[in-house]
Length: 171
Image (cartoon, rainbow, N blue to C red; front, side, top):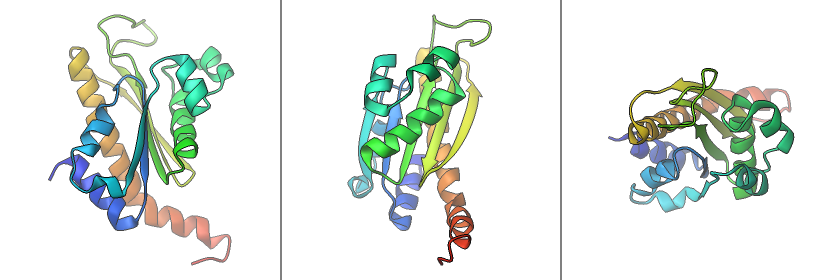
C-alpha cells in the first residue's frame, strides 16, 4: 500500500477532509492524493501558492511573517497550513515551503531545506527537512515526507481529540 493510499484510508475511516497548500512541491502532494480512487470523498482542494503574494492572498500568511522569517520558514509553513485549512474549510491541511534548487540557496537556508506543517482540527505539527539531490528529487522527497507527516498526525488524532475534549466535558 502506498503512503497516499494509507492517508486516504485514514481520512475516510476518521471522516476527515483534507486540503493542500503547496509551494516548493508545486502540487505533487495533491497529485499523489488524487491518484487514489475514491479520494474525492475526503480531498477538497489543493492550492499551489508559489509566490509570497499568493501565500498572503490565498492562505492569509502575514506580510510581517514573510518579512521577518522568509517564505522558507517554520512560521510560514504553519501559517500556510492553518490558513489553508480555514480557506478550504477542511479538517486537515498539509503545507510545504522550501528551496528545491538548483539555485536560491544560502548558507543559512541551503538548497534542499523544506518546512512542512500539518494542521488537524486546529493543532499544527511542523517538520524541518534537509533533502539532497536535484530539483525533482528534492520535490519528490518533500511530497513523500509531507504525506508521512499527515499519516503520523492522523494516527495521533484520537489522543489529541481525547485531550481536547477532556477539558470541555465532552466525550
